Image (cartoon, rainbow, N blue to C red; front, side, top):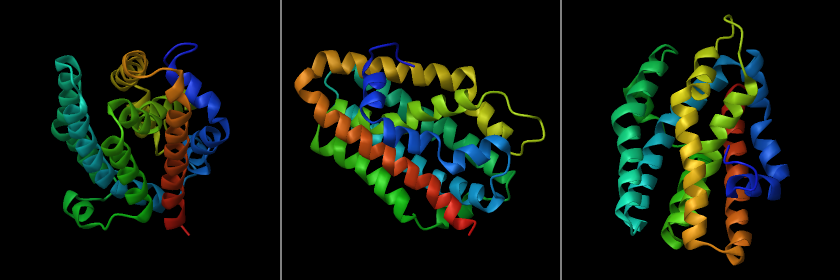
Length: 221
């Protein structure tokens, strides 16, 4: 995604076990072959609505933590994309699965949702904008990699639209841009001395993402 030797690639390599557990989780494998229980997917969708709200807050924090106008603009653009575009698409998508926005707003945040989203915000508050973007990377860039790895799915797969959304050019381009931003931030704010801490953040975020998948499966019994 970010090119050989890029920060994202290095973080994945340093956390190969956690990355595999996240990207090859049963939720992902069953979604890819269409066997994922509908109850698991609906639980995931409802929690993902709440997840997106917290990600919008994370990009607002990224703008605050940035000290260059270009970075502030990029964070503001991502915030606007979530609030003004992605949330609407998510709500429309969820209607097809029998979930209304009012129902999702009333849904309590699962422990797994709280764990990952608050971890991201904490890393941003305690660290700098590089720490924050590394915490976001398993979700933002990871979904692009997962969808691309799944590849084309049959027309009768009930989750085809989900895969195509994240495999589409718009999302893939956005994820590639995020990977490039990681490299840029590492060059300006990092150095080899920071990699150990950033790797720990990435590994923790990947494990929390795997827990988020498991939360969906647990709903299906």
